Length: 341
Image (cartoon, rainbow, N blue to C red; front, side, top):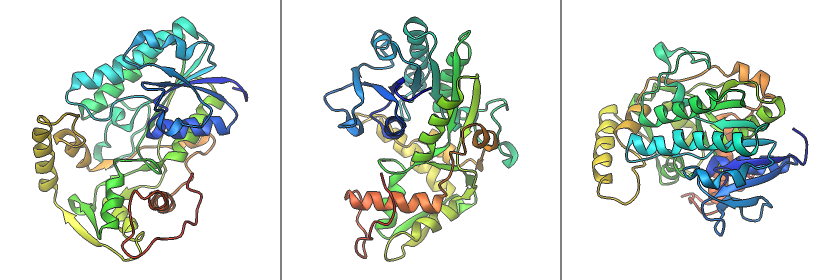
């Protein structure tokens, strides 16, 4: 890849995809992004990215996106849905549609699929999962992301890289943000005794991993995308508790309460309009004893992209939320001290 090359991007109007778009543009690539509503491009507004109307579930809209592209970065997907079939339509069939469009209109393009750690599954016996290990997804979401990977891997002659991000956080994020909101209101939940282990990745680092994959080229590889530090739920809560001016309470939330909340939320979601953000499956994922993975190969191959510890990333995220009024600090606004773009 060279400066000025065209990169086609799906999911660019969302959280992770917008960070990828900004990183691509900053690196000198041209970006053509898929948008369901180009008139409302979200975080891509004013970036200079070319917008193409379409949806990964609509195969007819994708050739115009990928035509003449040197690379295709596929980020789009569903993280919440009412059924496994709905996940599959977006994450599995959507990936297959992207692959078919590449075959038709950009046969030499390098496809970078942004999948999920959920495709590999949690850590058996607490050992770090490696990309070469047999996948063990434990949810409909994880199975749909794995099916999307298989659509890419099974295409003969396709140049590809698959990236499996862990829990992504950072500016613009709206799900994990709830923990920051809780801290700003005076309490931080300590989930299920606090001993479960997890790795996380700052959004800017995830975007750097995509750039590293593009620079390396499509070699049919799969990498986990996560900072190497392993965090316990209690450690995450304690870090979040350092962010407000007035230290919040740490509030234990038992595993049984989390499971019950997941079941109740799932039932109540049947009466709502949108898909459930939290349900029994999400609770089950949350309560796994370990979501840890080996990222040593990714660090070496992708240019050491994972640079932001959770303590630093959480502070940058907190400051960004404050600056934009997404949260308010009970003890007075904290001055912005870091780069929050």
